[in-house]
Amino acid sequence: MSKRFFVLLAILLFLAAACVAPQRRVRPDPSNPVYTVALLPMYNATNDVDGPRAVREAFFKRLDNMNYLPKALSEVDQTLMDRMGITLGSQLEMTSPRELGETLGVDGVIYGYLLNFDDVTTGLYNMKKVRAAFKLVDARTGRVVWARALGVKSGLAGGDVGVGVTLLKELKGDGLEDLKNIKGLSDIPGLADWHLLRAGKTEKVEDAAMLAIGEKLFSKALGVHLKFETDEMIDKLMAGFPAGPGTASRGEPAVADEARPRYRDPAPPPPGRPLPPPWR
Image 1 (cartoon, rainbow, N blue to C red):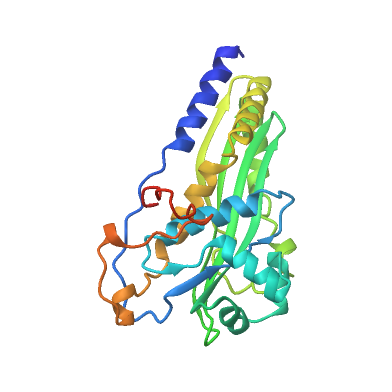
Image 2 (image 1 turned 60 degrees about the vertical axis):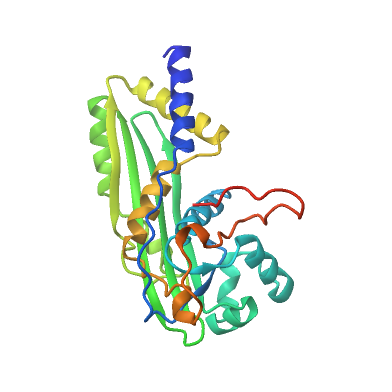
Protein backbone atom coordinates (compact mmCIF):
# COMPACT_ATOMS: atom_id res chain seq x y z
CA MET A 1 0.00 0.00 0.00
CA SER A 2 1.21 3.51 -0.76
CA LYS A 3 2.53 6.08 1.67
CA ARG A 4 -0.39 8.29 0.67
CA PHE A 5 -2.79 5.67 2.02
CA PHE A 6 -1.21 5.78 5.47
CA VAL A 7 -1.23 9.58 5.46
CA LEU A 8 -4.96 9.55 4.70
CA LEU A 9 -5.51 6.94 7.40
CA ALA A 10 -3.73 9.12 9.95
CA ILE A 11 -5.80 12.16 8.97
CA LEU A 12 -9.06 10.21 9.29
CA LEU A 13 -8.11 8.89 12.71
CA PHE A 14 -7.14 12.35 13.89
CA LEU A 15 -10.39 13.90 12.68
CA ALA A 16 -12.44 11.12 14.24
CA ALA A 17 -10.67 11.60 17.56
CA ALA A 18 -11.23 15.35 17.47
CA CYS A 19 -14.93 15.16 16.64
CA VAL A 20 -16.80 14.38 19.84
CA ALA A 21 -20.56 14.21 19.46
CA PRO A 22 -22.39 16.44 21.97
CA GLN A 23 -24.15 14.53 24.70
CA ARG A 24 -27.83 15.23 25.36
CA ARG A 25 -28.70 16.12 28.95
CA VAL A 26 -31.41 13.86 30.31
CA ARG A 27 -34.29 14.96 32.53
CA PRO A 28 -33.58 14.64 36.27
CA ASP A 29 -35.28 11.94 38.30
CA PRO A 30 -36.11 13.35 41.77
CA SER A 31 -36.93 9.84 43.05
CA ASN A 32 -33.31 8.74 42.63
CA PRO A 33 -31.62 9.01 46.06
CA VAL A 34 -28.12 9.00 44.54
CA TYR A 35 -26.73 12.40 43.55
CA THR A 36 -23.01 12.58 44.34
CA VAL A 37 -21.13 9.67 42.75
CA ALA A 38 -17.59 8.36 42.45
CA LEU A 39 -16.42 6.32 39.47
CA LEU A 40 -14.01 3.86 41.04
CA PRO A 41 -10.79 2.51 39.46
CA MET A 42 -11.63 -0.25 37.01
CA TYR A 43 -10.92 -3.92 37.53
CA ASN A 44 -8.63 -4.86 34.65
CA ALA A 45 -9.14 -8.40 33.35
CA THR A 46 -7.06 -7.66 30.22
CA ASN A 47 -3.35 -7.39 29.46
CA ASP A 48 -3.68 -3.78 28.31
CA VAL A 49 -2.44 -1.19 30.80
CA ASP A 50 -4.00 1.83 29.05
CA GLY A 51 -7.45 0.37 28.42
CA PRO A 52 -8.90 0.91 31.92
CA ARG A 53 -8.02 4.60 31.86
CA ALA A 54 -9.51 5.14 28.39
CA VAL A 55 -12.78 3.33 29.17
CA ARG A 56 -13.13 4.93 32.60
CA GLU A 57 -12.65 8.44 31.20
CA ALA A 58 -15.17 7.78 28.42
CA PHE A 59 -17.76 6.71 31.01
CA PHE A 60 -16.98 9.67 33.27
CA LYS A 61 -17.49 12.23 30.50
CA ARG A 62 -21.04 11.01 29.95
CA LEU A 63 -21.94 11.38 33.63
CA ASP A 64 -21.85 15.15 33.21
CA ASN A 65 -25.17 15.10 31.35
CA MET A 66 -26.96 12.63 33.61
CA ASN A 67 -27.83 15.03 36.48
CA TYR A 68 -25.33 13.59 38.93
CA LEU A 69 -22.49 15.35 40.73
CA PRO A 70 -19.45 13.19 39.89
CA LYS A 71 -16.28 13.43 41.94
CA ALA A 72 -13.18 14.14 39.84
CA LEU A 73 -11.28 10.96 38.94
CA SER A 74 -7.99 12.31 40.25
CA GLU A 75 -9.61 13.15 43.60
CA VAL A 76 -11.16 9.68 43.82
CA ASP A 77 -7.81 8.02 43.12
CA GLN A 78 -5.89 10.22 45.55
CA THR A 79 -8.39 9.73 48.37
CA LEU A 80 -8.50 5.96 47.92
CA MET A 81 -4.72 5.75 47.92
CA ASP A 82 -4.18 8.07 50.91
CA ARG A 83 -6.97 6.82 53.14
CA MET A 84 -7.45 3.19 52.14
CA GLY A 85 -4.26 2.18 50.34
CA ILE A 86 -6.25 1.30 47.21
CA THR A 87 -4.69 1.94 43.82
CA LEU A 88 -6.23 -0.83 41.67
CA GLY A 89 -9.78 -1.86 40.91
CA SER A 90 -8.97 -5.42 41.98
CA GLN A 91 -8.39 -4.16 45.55
CA LEU A 92 -11.94 -2.81 45.94
CA GLU A 93 -13.23 -6.20 47.05
CA MET A 94 -11.36 -5.68 50.32
CA THR A 95 -13.90 -3.06 51.36
CA SER A 96 -17.64 -2.32 51.00
CA PRO A 97 -19.79 0.23 49.14
CA ARG A 98 -20.71 1.84 52.46
CA GLU A 99 -17.07 2.30 53.49
CA LEU A 100 -16.17 3.61 50.05
CA GLY A 101 -19.07 6.06 50.11
CA GLU A 102 -18.13 7.36 53.57
CA THR A 103 -14.47 7.69 52.64
CA LEU A 104 -15.16 9.49 49.37
CA GLY A 105 -18.13 11.49 50.69
CA VAL A 106 -20.58 10.36 48.01
CA ASP A 107 -24.07 8.85 47.80
CA GLY A 108 -23.17 6.23 45.23
CA VAL A 109 -20.17 4.39 43.84
CA ILE A 110 -19.74 3.06 40.32
CA TYR A 111 -17.76 -0.14 39.87
CA GLY A 112 -16.21 -0.85 36.47
CA TYR A 113 -14.73 -4.02 34.98
CA LEU A 114 -12.72 -4.03 31.75
CA LEU A 115 -13.13 -7.51 30.27
CA ASN A 116 -11.72 -7.09 26.75
CA PHE A 117 -9.50 -4.49 25.14
CA ASP A 118 -8.10 -6.52 22.27
CA ASP A 119 -6.66 -5.73 18.87
CA VAL A 120 -5.68 -9.04 17.24
CA THR A 121 -3.98 -8.99 13.83
CA THR A 122 -3.28 -12.23 11.97
CA GLY A 123 -3.85 -11.20 8.35
CA LEU A 124 -6.58 -13.79 7.78
CA TYR A 125 -8.70 -12.14 10.42
CA ASN A 126 -8.14 -8.88 12.29
CA MET A 127 -10.44 -8.37 15.24
CA LYS A 128 -10.97 -5.56 17.73
CA LYS A 129 -12.93 -6.17 20.91
CA VAL A 130 -13.85 -3.87 23.76
CA ARG A 131 -16.09 -5.22 26.51
CA ALA A 132 -16.83 -3.76 29.93
CA ALA A 133 -19.30 -4.03 32.79
CA PHE A 134 -20.44 -1.33 35.21
CA LYS A 135 -22.76 -1.08 38.18
CA LEU A 136 -24.02 1.86 40.23
CA VAL A 137 -24.46 1.06 43.92
CA ASP A 138 -26.21 3.14 46.57
CA ALA A 139 -23.38 3.44 49.08
CA ARG A 140 -25.72 3.87 52.06
CA THR A 141 -27.84 0.77 51.47
CA GLY A 142 -25.63 -1.40 49.26
CA ARG A 143 -28.47 -1.67 46.73
CA VAL A 144 -27.48 -2.03 43.07
CA VAL A 145 -29.29 0.81 41.33
CA TRP A 146 -28.16 -0.15 37.81
CA ALA A 147 -25.86 -2.71 36.21
CA ARG A 148 -25.00 -3.52 32.59
CA ALA A 149 -22.30 -5.18 30.51
CA LEU A 150 -21.68 -5.00 26.77
CA GLY A 151 -19.03 -5.76 24.20
CA VAL A 152 -18.33 -4.19 20.80
CA LYS A 153 -16.46 -5.86 17.94
CA SER A 154 -14.95 -4.68 14.68
CA GLY A 155 -13.60 -7.13 12.12
CA LEU A 156 -11.47 -6.99 8.97
CA ALA A 157 -10.85 -10.20 7.02
CA GLY A 158 -8.24 -10.88 4.38
CA GLY A 159 -9.91 -12.47 1.35
CA ASP A 160 -12.68 -15.06 1.26
CA VAL A 161 -10.63 -17.53 3.31
CA GLY A 162 -10.18 -14.88 5.95
CA VAL A 163 -13.93 -14.29 6.11
CA GLY A 164 -14.45 -17.97 6.89
CA VAL A 165 -11.76 -17.93 9.56
CA THR A 166 -13.27 -14.81 11.10
CA LEU A 167 -16.71 -16.40 11.26
CA LEU A 168 -15.31 -19.52 12.92
CA LYS A 169 -13.43 -17.31 15.37
CA GLU A 170 -16.61 -15.43 16.24
CA LEU A 171 -18.56 -18.65 16.81
CA LYS A 172 -16.23 -19.62 19.62
CA GLY A 173 -16.96 -18.75 23.24
CA ASP A 174 -16.49 -15.24 24.58
CA GLY A 175 -14.33 -16.24 27.53
CA LEU A 176 -17.04 -16.08 30.19
CA GLU A 177 -15.48 -19.09 31.89
CA ASP A 178 -12.37 -17.02 32.56
CA LEU A 179 -14.41 -14.28 34.22
CA LYS A 180 -16.47 -16.31 36.67
CA ASN A 181 -14.01 -15.83 39.53
CA ILE A 182 -14.15 -12.02 39.42
CA LYS A 183 -16.03 -10.98 42.54
CA GLY A 184 -19.08 -8.80 41.92
CA LEU A 185 -19.28 -9.52 38.20
CA SER A 186 -21.68 -12.45 38.01
CA ASP A 187 -24.76 -10.39 38.88
CA ILE A 188 -24.25 -7.92 36.02
CA PRO A 189 -26.50 -8.65 32.99
CA GLY A 190 -25.19 -8.57 29.42
CA LEU A 191 -21.81 -10.23 29.87
CA ALA A 192 -22.36 -12.33 26.74
CA ASP A 193 -23.90 -9.50 24.69
CA TRP A 194 -21.91 -8.28 21.69
CA HIS A 195 -22.55 -5.55 19.13
CA LEU A 196 -20.84 -5.62 15.73
CA LEU A 197 -19.69 -2.09 14.97
CA ARG A 198 -18.18 -2.70 11.55
CA ALA A 199 -16.92 -5.55 9.39
CA GLY A 200 -15.10 -5.67 6.08
CA LYS A 201 -12.65 -7.57 3.93
CA THR A 202 -9.85 -7.00 1.47
CA GLU A 203 -9.03 -8.97 -1.66
CA LYS A 204 -5.64 -10.05 -0.32
CA VAL A 205 -4.59 -11.29 3.11
CA GLU A 206 -1.51 -9.07 3.14
CA ASP A 207 -3.62 -5.97 2.47
CA ALA A 208 -5.83 -6.73 5.47
CA ALA A 209 -2.80 -7.23 7.70
CA MET A 210 -1.13 -4.03 6.51
CA LEU A 211 -4.33 -2.03 6.97
CA ALA A 212 -4.90 -3.40 10.47
CA ILE A 213 -1.30 -2.83 11.55
CA GLY A 214 -1.27 0.68 10.08
CA GLU A 215 -4.46 1.65 11.87
CA LYS A 216 -3.18 0.22 15.15
CA LEU A 217 0.10 2.14 14.92
CA PHE A 218 -1.55 5.44 14.04
CA SER A 219 -4.33 5.14 16.62
CA LYS A 220 -1.83 4.38 19.39
CA ALA A 221 0.38 7.27 18.32
CA LEU A 222 -2.63 9.61 18.46
CA GLY A 223 -3.85 8.23 21.77
CA VAL A 224 -7.13 7.00 20.31
CA HIS A 225 -6.53 3.26 20.18
CA LEU A 226 -9.87 1.40 20.08
CA LYS A 227 -11.66 4.72 20.57
CA PHE A 228 -14.43 3.92 18.07
CA GLU A 229 -15.24 0.66 19.80
CA THR A 230 -14.98 2.22 23.27
CA ASP A 231 -17.29 5.13 22.47
CA GLU A 232 -19.86 2.87 20.81
CA MET A 233 -19.81 0.49 23.76
CA ILE A 234 -20.22 3.26 26.36
CA ASP A 235 -23.02 4.98 24.42
CA LYS A 236 -25.01 1.76 24.07
CA LEU A 237 -24.24 0.55 27.56
CA MET A 238 -25.36 3.83 29.16
CA ALA A 239 -28.58 4.09 27.14
CA GLY A 240 -30.41 2.62 30.14
CA PHE A 241 -28.40 4.42 32.81
CA PRO A 242 -30.81 6.04 35.32
CA ALA A 243 -30.97 9.82 35.48
CA GLY A 244 -29.72 11.50 38.62
CA PRO A 245 -31.95 13.69 40.78
CA GLY A 246 -30.31 17.00 39.88
CA THR A 247 -29.71 19.85 42.31
CA ALA A 248 -33.37 20.81 42.74
CA SER A 249 -34.16 17.56 44.54
CA ARG A 250 -31.61 18.52 47.20
CA GLY A 251 -33.46 21.69 48.09
CA GLU A 252 -31.11 23.78 46.00
CA PRO A 253 -32.38 26.22 43.38
CA ALA A 254 -32.57 24.80 39.89
CA VAL A 255 -29.57 25.79 37.78
CA ALA A 256 -29.70 26.31 34.03
CA ASP A 257 -27.48 23.99 32.00
CA GLU A 258 -25.32 26.92 30.90
CA ALA A 259 -24.67 27.90 34.52
CA ARG A 260 -24.11 24.43 35.97
CA PRO A 261 -20.55 23.84 37.23
CA ARG A 262 -18.55 21.41 35.12
CA TYR A 263 -16.26 19.10 37.04
CA ARG A 264 -12.96 18.63 35.33
CA ASP A 265 -10.11 16.22 35.73
CA PRO A 266 -7.43 17.42 36.22
CA ALA A 267 -8.31 20.37 38.44
CA PRO A 268 -8.95 23.89 37.05
CA PRO A 269 -5.97 26.22 36.55
CA PRO A 270 -4.74 28.21 39.56
CA PRO A 271 -6.27 31.61 40.49
CA GLY A 272 -5.43 34.47 38.18
CA ARG A 273 -5.70 32.39 35.02
CA PRO A 274 -8.93 32.32 32.98
CA LEU A 275 -10.98 29.13 33.17
CA PRO A 276 -11.45 27.13 29.96
CA PRO A 277 -14.94 26.97 28.39
CA PRO A 278 -17.40 24.64 30.18
CA TRP A 279 -16.66 20.99 29.48
CA ARG A 280 -19.55 19.26 27.79
